[in-house]
Image 1 (cartoon, rainbow, N blue to C red):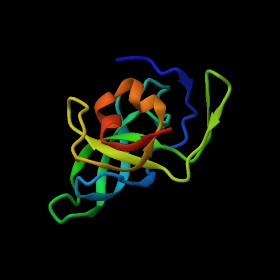
Image 2: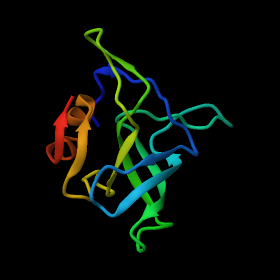
Image 3: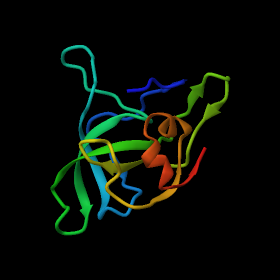
Image 4: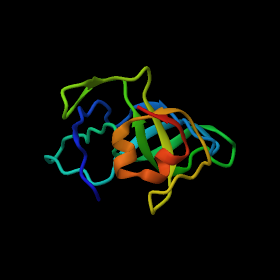
Length: 132
């Protein structure tokens, strides 16, 4: 997997509730775990833009509710710093559902995604409304 060009501040942890910004059928996600997290024993994993999470669907279509899915975080409220010194922040936290091969489940993404997403997951950035 390609490395990120920015120093992402990890702003969300287990138990965070965030909206799903694609048309996969899920509306609200609840973070229950993180993929590829290496930390200290007993510490809750922290995640930010570009991280893949394991989430439970809290609201959405009836066949999606209570389902455990993988999702990719595409926006976060907490600002983070890019290599050129620019600081980036978004109005909300948001995630999109992905499958086991990290391809998007939905066919379109509402709102913009971070440029760091297009570096690591180009298929997700291709269906988004824009890249910031």
